[in-house]
Image (cartoon, rainbow, N blue to C red):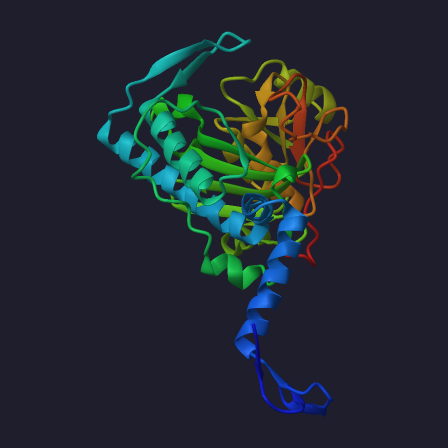
Length: 358
């Protein structure tokens, strides 16, 4: 966009130069802007191939702080549904079949409706993420499910800096209703909803929500934990010289004999429901270790594993192997899994958080 007029000066913005051209050329600033924009667009299209690829590249990067906020919102929303259905006594319980140990494996409307809300709220907030749930979606209208909120004031106050990672490195594991058997028996204290964010297979962010007490625990490995959880951990501690081992009430298997063989006949074995509940019991000092010796699924473990990681502990198989939460790994774990609260317990690799951290 160049305009010529009579004279002997070439005019550039803010500068004049004498040249023997027999005419004067003035550079139109608007035209220069258009040319510059066009050059930039050509470079961008060359780099990304198309505007579609550009949008895809931008959406492939995920803020973990935003994802933590969304995970909290999702777990709490699922919890409200679980609570409402239990209060209405409209569970419509069915059976998925029997577990390997012969126990009933129930599913209720609480499981399904919580799944729909948790899964689609996260999927709408982060369309590019892989989300793995215990339950499967049914053909229903999900248009009324809003995206999970990516803004949480508590998270912002604790997590002062963010990490952004490629979506392809993330798997989100959700358990829309942990302890379904106990839910059907109205044993409400064991029930949780859980969300876990694994990055390259490592349990990184965990949310465990208790819908009937409205207690939400969350942790981000290397970053921090929820203030409510931190306060409850600070109050815990060993009660006596006896090992208090918490195990599943419905999948106990041979764990009691295994625990007593490791810790002695005076070992106190506590039976409880829900992997989320039992993991929190260890973290909060109500048990010294949680041991599981039968088949267990990764959506039962991932959130608790991440919270333990955030508290400088860990969760392993009883042979000391860490658990890989990559989607290409098996969703079930055959064999023994355990996590303990105190350093003197050698049954697993889990350690109690350091006091200076608390």
